[in-house]
Amino acid sequence: MKDTNERSLRFQVEKWLAPGPATSVHVVEFSRTHSGRRRYVCVETKQLAGLRALFFFRHDDGCWRVFPPAVDRPKTSADRLAL
Image (cartoon, rainbow, N blue to C red; front, side, top):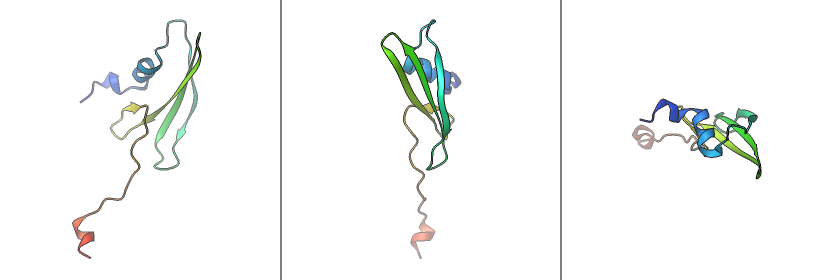
């Protein structure tokens, strides 16, 4: 299991955007996806090279990642197949 720190949005922002001490980080959008109603956040940094922004998605295990969770699909059970 991952360390609680690695699951945090702050850890992921620092990992992927690597803001420096003089770099500001802003949440520019947060909401839920249309399918699955999962949380997402768009974070932006302004650096000498220009603006950088990434979307982070909250997964069922509580981790924030840069890719969206798999779409919820209905589960197939042996009972339903027997019909």
